Length: 303
Image (cartoon, rainbow, N blue to C red; front, side):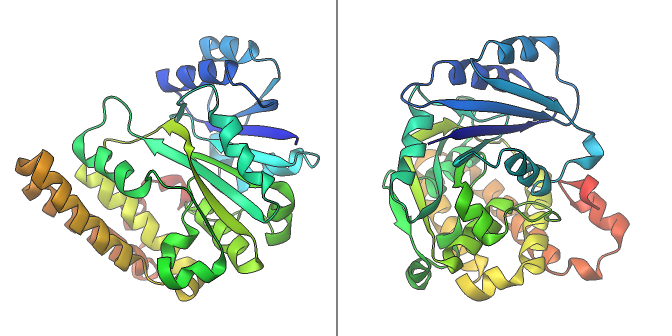
């Protein structure tokens, strides 16, 4: 299979250098790496990128970056690719087989999308650690549209921090949306499931990836998620409300913190309350003035 790896970057840091180093040592799979830079990364990054066997670099204007549109443009530039792998600049491959294990999911011809397991960075704090433990478990699975009755909106879960797509499946569903604020990965996964493709979770394919968000960051992030779910309301109609999954998250988070960091439970209550408030406000974003939306959003360029 022809595999292309796409990595959008914006002012990367040491994590991106670590990612490039891990790309150099990948085994059992051949691929081309494409970096799409919406700023101007330094010479150290470019030097390491040039040491990969097959790599390209493209610089774009920051104002032109779009979570879905930029990624779809990557796919469109390489119509002969069979598998398109997406990574974010802060996701570090766990070992030398991370890419090969993820790509192996496409040996099943019904799989349109596969994503790997994210484990927390070494500097992750308890809230970030739990988020990865909750969303990325040990057991693999392959979901079809019929699984929504049991798993609800989780059926369409995916993460472009480490995900791969079958090119023909992307063509089948029209690719990434050009105007989404975020969650272009869930958008495509949901479209694929409805079209009859399957989504695979491959926990043996791992990356280090987590964020130590502040409470305000969490509010802004969930505001954007609410905006996405409001604008793409068909996902909730087809797969169920996100609040159900959120409720399970909170219950399990309390149990986790009670055992590991009980003094953080009051902070958790405030944090999760702000996440819920942000999400509910995002669902009402059409009633919120544009200037306020920019302040609420993690993606102010979108507005």
